Each structure stands twice: as C-alpha cells, then as structure tokens.
Image (cartoon, rainbow, N blue to C red; front, side, top):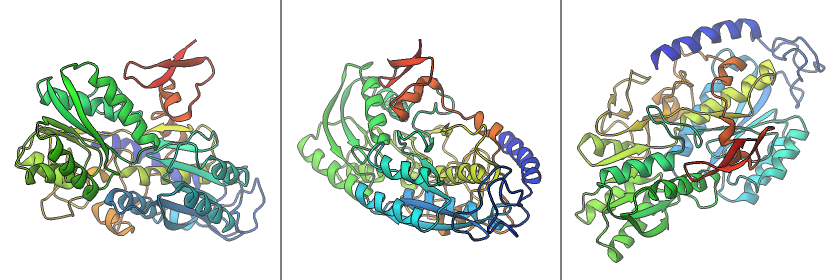
Length: 429
C-alpha cells in the first residue's frame, strides 16, 4: 500500500503543476473556454458567478458514525491545497427519505452548486433530480451506494474484489468466510442494512449465492438492522429469543449491536460484520469473525473525483470507479497508533474512538485521510492533497462484467448475464 501511495503522490505533483491551481483570480465571470487558473481549458466558470466553485458534500442523517466520517473526509479533502484556492465546500446532511433528498438536491442546484457529492438513498428514485442537476451543468458524484442515471459518476466498493480475494462483492466474500468459520454447517441469522438501497441489494443477493455452496447452512430468520447498532442489537436480541439455536450471524453495518446482543445472551458464535471499531476490538480479543465492509474513505475519494472533473475536465475520467478495500480477521487485525495511516493498520487503540467509528477511513486512494479529519471535517495541519488524474482513475475503472449491477445496463458489446456470485451482470456478446 505504501508504494501505491507514493506513486499516486508523484503523479499528483505533476498533475497539480499542470493544473496550475494557484488561485482563482479572474474565475468570476470567466467564459466557457477560459484559461483561468481554476477553469480548465474548455471548462465552465463557477455557476454562481463567484471566484470559487461551490461543491456540496452530502451524507445521510441516520445517526451512524460511517455517514458522518464519510462526509467529514470529503469536506476535509476539499479544504486542502491545491483545491482550497478554487473550491468552497458546503457539508449538508439529508434525512433518509427519497423525497427529502430530491428536495435537497434541487436546493443545492438552485444555490449555484458546481458539484454535488452524494450518498444516494436509491439506485433509481433520485434519478430525475440528478438528471436535472446534470442538465444545468452540475457534476454529480455518488459514493458507496450507486445510481443508474448515466450522467452521475459512481464511486463505490460494492462491485470491487477485496484485497487477497478472487471474487467480487462484499456479501459474497463475507458469507463465504462466515460459513467457513462455522465449519460449513449450522443455522444463521441474516441482517439487512437499509432495505432497497443498491448496497443492501447487492450484499444480500451475492451472500445468498455464496450460501448455495454450503447447503448445510440454513437461514433461521432475516431482519432489517438499518445500519444502526442499536437497531441491530434490538433485532438480534429479539431473534435470539425466538431462535436460540443459531450458530452464526451475517450482520451488516452496526455489527457491534449483533455482538453485544450475543454477549448479553452468553453466546460466542461466528459473526460476519463490517468495519466498526468495536467489532475489530473483539477480533483482537479472539472473537470468531470476519470484518469486511464499506470504507468511509469513499466520501473523500468521491470528493477528489468531483474535483478532478471540475478542475481538469471530464476527459478520460471513468463514470464507474471501483474502490479497493480489505478483509480483516483475527489473523491480520493491526492497531493504528497514529493520526495518519501506518502500514497494515486497521483498528484504532481501544479507548481512542467510539464503538462505531472505523479505521477504514484509510485507503490507498485517500492518502490525505487522518483520524482527526474524519472526526472534525477539517484537514490535518501540513497535509496536502494528491489530485487524481484520469490515468489514475482508469486503473480503478469498474470491470464491464459488473456494470449491470450499478447501471442496470451493459456497455456496448456486452449483454446481460448472471455472474457466478449470483448477481446480474454482463457478458461479452
């Protein structure tokens, strides 16, 4: 990972020099095609007519640390040099209701947004608002969850192949690891996140495909954990009361609630969870489980993609970008003892952060990340950004075979097909 970060940094220095983001003097009122320091050749001046591009960083207001960390990292990145001389970032949270998100997007566009970095509540329900925003010259980048609207850039891990794995999809890999920990037999609970989001759909469908390979593992019950630890704990406790003979739990974000419910019931069984501090502390202490999930670093990565489109132009930047992520078990769990990344670290010192925070704020695509930035939304002192180039992002372009998962359409020369992981994808014609 360290070598990759160095490589990105070297490319970024060249990119920053080429972009010439020294300041925004003259950006106000610049016409299309201006050579202003902030407006790329052939680009557009800020929509609101000011001297800086206005970029909104938006996340869901659902009370989980992941959403706050992702938004804070995006907010912090935009405040770093060389971006800060050309960008004004505004952080907003939205209620978990599609109509509320549509209204918020419309308000951002009316307020002069040049770019919107957003966590979408639905792969399709917000499309009309996104399409209208694009039509008015706004760059829209979704992160983590994805949307089908063609004008939106999707930046997500949900179709990525985790490090050291051979198959894509978190749900598939998590279920495979869970059933292995169970010895290939027994009964499980399946906990969903927010039902209906593209993220939950893909996790669940790929997990069911993995489960088919172990016919001696049966689902006792399913419930909606809503990516909230309190909800997970409540629903898991309720299910334990009805089905005490459970042997494992497939748990989504908020997995600390699943483990706490098990502890209260005096049961120590394998759990597949996401990336919470609490869960990884349990792995450190010997709890049987696998931690694999969505990195909140995606908020910062998506912001960098939006700024690349604004400040250097869209040419060569993929519309579908896969974010790399890791699988953590008791074999490779390692403490992060600094504010910034240290080689291989994936959990903070016990007592340093809250149960629901996660060390997956660190990612090879986000060397600008720090613990303090994820908590405050402000960059660490002395930190500088490493801007993406189109060439950087092309290395992370989504494999066309997985395009249908996020776009519900296949690229030219490809046709709809079912992937080995049980998810609808694409195959060459």
